Amino acid sequence: MSFSVSQFKQQFPLFSQPENRDLVYLDNAATTQKPAVVIDAIRDFYLHSNANTHRSSHRLARQATAMVERVRAQAAAFLGTGNVREVIFTRGATEGLNLLANSLCAELAPGDEVVLSTAEHHANLVPWQMAAARHQLHIRYVPDERGIPQFDRLVEVLGPRTRIVSLTAGSNALGFRADLAQIRQMLAGRDLRWVVDAAQLAAHEPIDVQEIGCDFLVCSAHKFYGPSGIGLLFGREQWLQQMPPWQGGGEMIADVDLHSSHYADLPHKFEAGTSSLAAIAGLGACLEFLQSQDRAAMAVHEQQLLRTLHEQVGKLPGMELLSSAENNLGILAFSDSRFVPVDLMHWLDGKDIAVRVGHHCAQPLIRATGHSATLRASLAAYNSEQDVARFVAAVAEFLDQLDSAENAPTHVEPEVAEGWPIDDLSVLDIEALRSRRGWQERYRLLMQWSKAIAAKPIIRSPEHLVQGCESSAWLVHRQLGEKHYFALDSDSRVVKGLGAFLLSQLNGKSLEEVRSTDLEALFTEFEFDKHLSPSRSNGFYALMQRAMAILEQQK
View 1 (cartoon, rainbow, N blue to C red):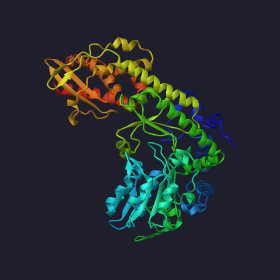
View 2: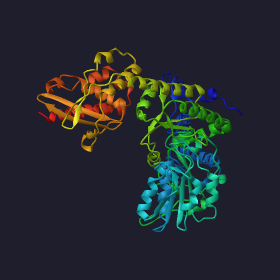
View 3: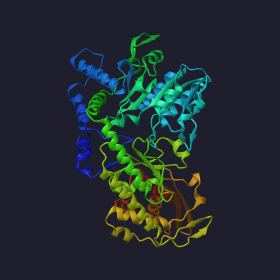
View 4: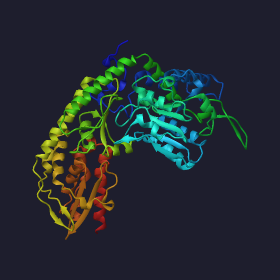
């Protein structure tokens, strides 16, 4: 077999929709798009087989039950185990890890140890922390360097009371892989249970739990072109038999009386309640779809794109690459001291390029790198060289307009009184904003307007923090006679630009004058509501509502 990116992409209906034909989707580490066969399988289940499983012998129930067990066998092959009793359906990797943390730790004694790494997704941190608190366990971490685990030093934290080692196969934030073969060698012969979080790995290479040698492994279908709401948990039968169930209810019960219950056999012992049956049908179609692909050729294609992405972005001035193209699961992560990542994200969104910013549910790792947020572009096999080129060009254009904003006239030195300055917003021209017809041009002007807002460290205190802004923003107020004045500060240039726009309509006015100004209508007129994310739009409204609430208190 071989791989054609154009033929592969044609199998994903989202990209053929009129509104998405120019979309560059680089948020695949969060979730992948779905091929037509997956969408059709979900629809087909509801059209032809919708019934609950195992609990009835009528025709539809038999069909649904047969489908579930057929997909379980497919999943066993996908994971590399020939034993269907070792495959448990979950709602996703998060539920699988919660199940393991609750069931495995219930059998431990106070003082036993769980080993994790600083690179774990919150889903592989929080459940173990909760279980450790409940059972008086100790959590130890693999030694790290600026948050990046040094897995070759794992043996340094293994001790006679280590009972569980739960590690990611690849970072969802920076993309680096763990050397699973090396970890297997270091854990060999020890009386412990090894859990692998393969949520990121499953999309990029075949999984073989026998070769990996782990005791448990979790993954989520939506990360490898399958539906949301369904995941897989592999567990070795001998350990699953010993573990107590996590949740109680239907399906996982063999017999119940008023005082005791007997649990069903594997794997149903861990599948309480009604499963996501349509999602299981979609998962089956997804597994067939992946089996028909040349996975090795897909991986080569992704790695070529990833190298190009790192090379091209690395050449842009001022960029700090936090990821490396080597041994990477398709992720580029970077930051730049000149702007907050969310500002670039909105610029890219205006170019119809989808990426993600934030700590990516890996706060300890991102903090250890010296950042609070990064911009992450993550690849899938349907991405192309053209996608990479558009992304790099859009980032370069953002940096160019950033430079032009830096060269724009600065604000007049503000008046300083009562400890914080009143910014001079007289240089802002609403008519100039009105004359900019395209969103990108208005965005550029907002970035320039951000320079009218001086830094005000003195107002950055909890009582002035405005809740609801996507980036932190602080707002203060002063009244001079009948005139009202506000000042704000933020790390985000876009928030400062929007704040300058807002304050230009408030500062130096009486309460009656402010009430006569329809700020929401202005926001809509300039189409900010269409082009800013809901959280960013909500941030503007949060600033406006805080300002109006302050004014009402002055009456």
